[in-house]
Image 1 (cartoon, rainbow, N blue to C red):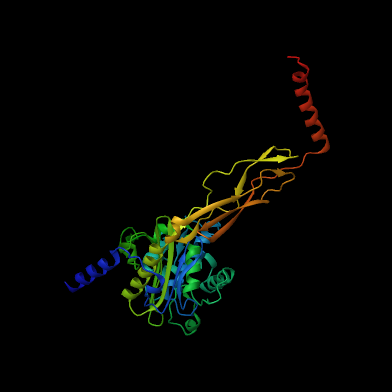
Image 2: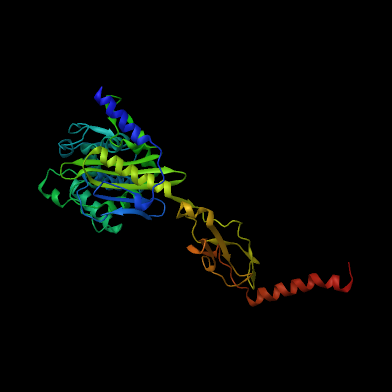
Length: 388
């Protein structure tokens, strides 16, 4: 009965609607935390976000990223069978108890890693991608460097801290948020990160998601939990509401409840206080006349179409101003800046988006110009002479 009461209370806390909380009022008990907008990468809140800490199984965000990238570039296939080596089967911690030589589909291996944080499956996938866990870890560190992650150094693909070198397995809330953002670019990963309960091995082995937000927080899209005695309770959480997706990372929490409540507080703050604004002009941009061009008209376009993030209280003050010339002169290169759209909230400039040429327009050659003039003269001559 006590267990059911505890579960009910936890669910009630997680399902409660988020209040409007200002930055000065935001309380996050996690020792290290960050809130990031997935679309723009904007940081909405941070607390000791660059402190190097052990990430436990949140490490698998990078493991999953490399697997998804290998699938996308054709290095491995969704149709592959993944074989468990002796080393993979011997992994401790969370697992589905792979036997040496056992094969599972790519789908079941990924499902087991994402939903149940299976260390044996994570190692089998790492070996499938790179040949060995050691080579895969080198790729993890190389990818971290490519992403500009200066707080990160991996020594394994699981986050387990039962090896002497595991003391050097470190990252930060900031770096994990960047990794999570990169992983979320792969839409198919959400087929797994949003699973609450499922099975593998033809229904013989049950999986239950360690990320309780999936069940109890509206809009949750993922992502990964972690726990070891050295790392404490960790979480990279993502959720999407009203077209805006946020990433909350909390590390070194004192309890599982604390990590979920800390992540929930961050997400509530983000959804309560921020919104994405479409940057498209209020009216479609009209074609501009091009003098001395092989084409008489050119349609200008925005250089970028990604929305911008603003505080919700600024929504009613948003204005967009277009600055374009009345006409253009050839030659014009594709992508050449023609003008600017300025987005403001009252007197504050939020963004200046270049307006560019949608295509190139060559200048008329002397022969083309002469031909065009003669054609116009010939068309005008009958009307001027009164001949019809």
